[in-house]
Image (cartoon, rainbow over all chains, first blue to last red; front, side, top):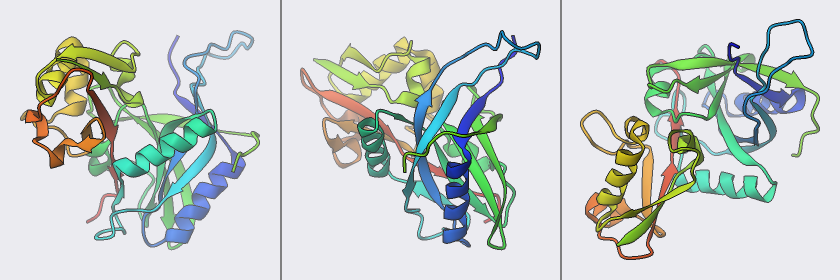
Length: 163
Length: 95
C-alpha cells in the first residue's frame, strides 16, 4: 500500500491561516497547529486506492514572528514560543503537530532555508499571500534524510474549530 | 551520573517512539552522544555535518539553556534532566 500523507484541517481554520497571512502582510506570519497524529489508516471500504489520513488539526496557536530584522522573508519561533504552544496543546488534550507560515509575494513552496531549518515529523503549512491576497496553501513534511520535503495533501474537513 | 534525556515529539519516531531515555553521563555532551549512539538516525537532525549542534536545537539542563552554561561541556549530576526543545524557522526564497 502506498502511503499518502494527509493533514485534515477545517475550512474555518484554513481561513484563519489565510487571514493571519493577510493581517501581517507584507511580513511573514507564523503559528502552531494543534491536533492529533492518527498514524496510518487504511481505507478498505472503498474500491479506490488505499490511503492514509495521518493527522488532524483542531486549533491554531498564532504566534508573533520573532524575526523583526527580516520579517518579509523570514520567520522565527523561539523555544519559549514552542513551549507555550506545547503547553496550550496539552491543556486542550492535543499536541503540536506542525507549524504554518506565509510567503508574502512568493509561491507556497518550501525554500532551501525552510529545509535547512525544518524538523522532521511536523507538518509545515505554507500560504502564499500575493499583494495582500491569499493564494495557494500547501503542506509539507521533511524527508527522513533531510534532502527535501514530501508534499502532504491538505484535506479540508468540517470539524468544529476549538478557537 | 544517570541523566534523563527528554526527546521532543518530532524526533520520537527515530528513537523507538520513546519520549525519554536515560544515560550514564558526566556532561551534557556525553548524554547527547549516548542518545545518538543508541539512536543513530537522530544524529543528522541534531547535528550539522561538522558535528555542531544545529542552531534550531535548544538544549536545556534542567531549566537552563546550556548556551549560558558550559554548552556541551556542562557537567551533569545524578537525576538531572536534559531537554531538547525545537526552535522553528523558515522563510521564502528571496532575500
